[in-house]
Length: 367
Image 1 (tube, one colour):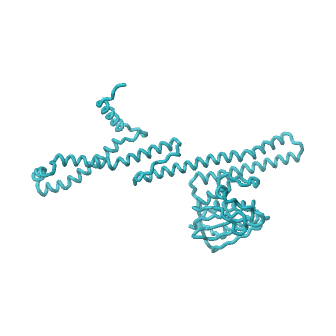
Image 2 (image 1 turned 60 degrees about the horizontal axis):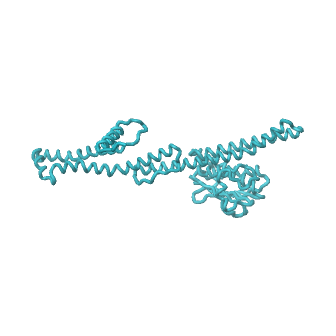
Image 3 (image 1 turned 180 degrees about the vertical axis):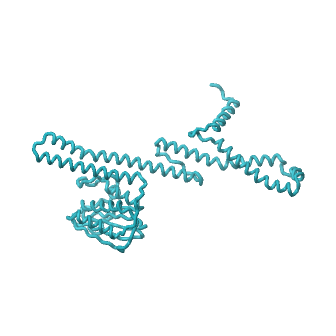
């Protein structure tokens, strides 16, 4: 291995410097020398321009010869002044640009990590007014991508698990249809296939709805809505669908009040809460509408077994079902939470007030 002499080292540095200045590829590595020299030269031009203006003024006022001979009175002579004019900008350029350069290199490395799918890395916190917002934006992007990837994995695993049961029933029904023992068994197998296909269609529809709300920044179709009229229509529909339950509603707002909301999505959230209540309620369901602290607040409470305190947060996760005998796919509450987030609102489970069962509350800002 040849020894790296001072001459060879300087030659290699010069070649690297020339390469960094002549490389025009879009993916070229950033060059510190290029950035520093460009900034230094611009700063030097600024210093010369600022120095030349008063110097010209002195030449006009005192004469060029007087100003020229006055250089001997300068401390250190003309050489020290020239050295200061070239050296101070060089030091200022380095002090100013070096931290920005370090931050730029760090941001570039994190961007390369994100391009390779390594979203677990984070950009270092920067106090620069230029790079700081960019670094925070990159970190927010990485966190968002991590959540989306986790949600996609969760959704894929959940759908694959939920598809197995209806597909197995369809396969079993098809075996029966090949050699039916009677017309009754044939009709029963057809009815079973029809029901399983309906379940699969419902699962796909709910999964697509959840994916749209989870993966995209939802642009809600917001429109002014008479809140009391919309609420009454939801309760009326539930009364017809769940006629075996006594549904009581209370409205504590001005019936002419209008709020801005996505009527379609919020109706989905409301129907889901009422459907869940009907599954677990024994006899009664209480629904209420009020305005609290500038927020629209709706609660749904039933007289069923309720939700254990330790499960009150987990039930809003996708494909989570506390009672697998009641049907469904565990996506309803997850979609409802996404709908409320799209309205800058929230959904929570609290202690029951009157009936002793589950007490769900949804709320979102009026404006």
